[in-house]
Image (tube, rainbow, N blue to C red; front, side, top):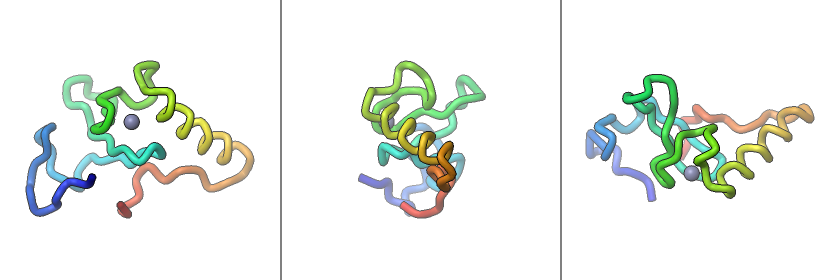
Length: 82
Ligand SMILES: [Zn+2]
């Protein structure tokens, strides 16, 4: 489910399209103002890159990391496409 861009703010108080990171697990992460350094997945609530991420999310991220390591383009975390 994607947020409606017309609604200016999401549950994290951030406007859609700002500080948004797309995740390979099809989740959307928002900048975590509290930590100031990390992004939090809106789907699972885990901090991106932390051990708190669900296995499926980690597996997807690792898959793309490996693909990039092998010379691929990798995952575009800042893609404008939904
Ligand atoms: Zn996730």
